[in-house]
Length: 196
Image (cartoon, rainbow, N blue to C red; front, side, top):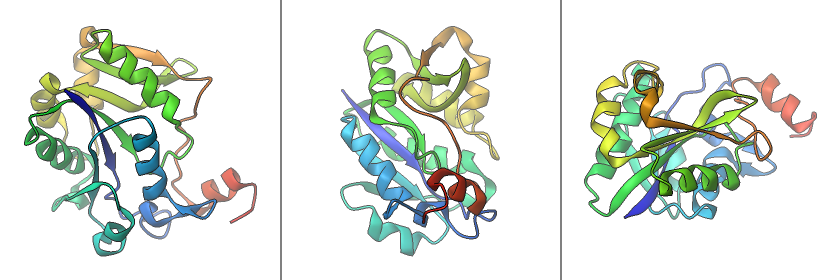
């Protein structure tokens, strides 16, 4: 059973001034960066959930399966549900790593550590940084129905993870990545040290 990569990239990026999937960092669109991250970590297939400006984001998703979330505007939960529904149709996928398009400092080593925790039997694994659980998260196929039911509004997997701590392994990734979100142009400016 393979471990898929699920990149959530459907938001409109209102505070950023446009979809974050299209924002460039070091000359590379964040959606391409996210696909590369999951691909380098051996995730197969890589699924990208698109919504806002889907017609602009889709051409940047070469090598990935693109799923459109018709309810993307209602929040991250709709995108997660759409992605998991697409993966459930693939009987060869046993788990997925859920990553967010606006966290470009996550590395493939973070994903590798989550996959190792799953290989050791964890039904769910969450990357932590300085002791705080953040993204990405790995979800075994058996958890998907419960996660989908709990993913409403802007809640992704968080509410399900909090409700089932006995199934969740926290994986320290402080030394191999950072969970910084790019939400505004100022965040991007700070990350690049002023360079665009």
